[in-house]
Length: 397
Image 1 (cartoon, one colour):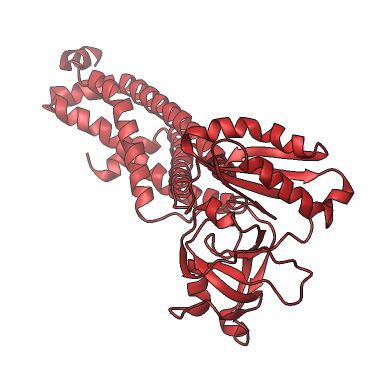
Image 2 (cartoon, rainbow, N blue to C red; image 1 turned 135 degrees about the vertical axis):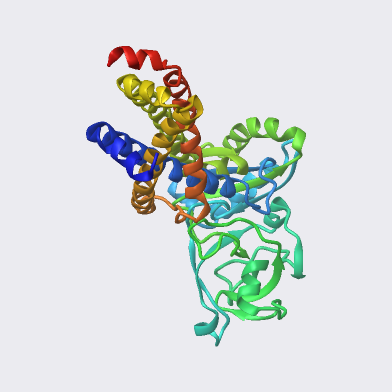
């Protein structure tokens, strides 16, 4: 049958074909964005973080008494809490920080090489004020220079030395050595291996640290600790009581591993990807049912026509391919409309979450999946239609 005749057959049933085309288009739009979001979420959840996510524990807390949130009482509290945490069996190292790694956002600002601001300015880099064992907790490798060994008071003259991650140092200095160089936040003391900082920063691996107490903790602070793998669960259970024994006037927001922190960071994308996958699955199922029903119904209506074709010499194979081709053409037309709907949906999702634009090969993958589902759904009714006897059509004339 010619392309013209196929189109004529399809559009002779305008309402049914129109609804089926719309359903196919909506299914393809959901399927495309579902695949795209699932692919992106999988990449984000499996990207290197530079951290031992399973064995680093994060405690986020805040003193509830105002006097404990300022110096010198705050400094004494931080030291006592670190001593108590480090005394727990299985803890390798513990440190405080004004904020945690693997975060959506937080305390950040620009950084640049002194006297080269226009060329080297990086607008949004996390600023960590940490104790000296912070790098031991993260398992950081010192790539250049030497780490500061003592906490420097922020009230002391001058600015504490800074430690940069490798990616940030390369951004600022290229291939040149960073230690001893002067940046807007102080003199560079060392460069360490990359770790995941803030998702909303200029780059997730750009981080700047100073071994100094935090300015203030009105919004809370973090205690990070590394534990031996076999003791992580036991250490986690003891943290709450250990910290409250040191000072009961604290509010502990959460205790979690960095692996859990990482999962929470992408929970919106993960949840939406799961929802879209479920909707896509349901839409594919409904589309298969619709394709099956449509093919079966119209095959019954065309029994006489099919019988006459058989009487005139058309083989079962030709009748079968003709019915499948009608559905393939309908799927192709619906797919064209579906790509435009997918672009609109992709643009709408981009206003709410981070999602990449549609790439060239994904529509082909989604169309192939849709075509396979429609073929499977119409296979049986098309097979039934080929069983119409030429005698049946002759008797009906």
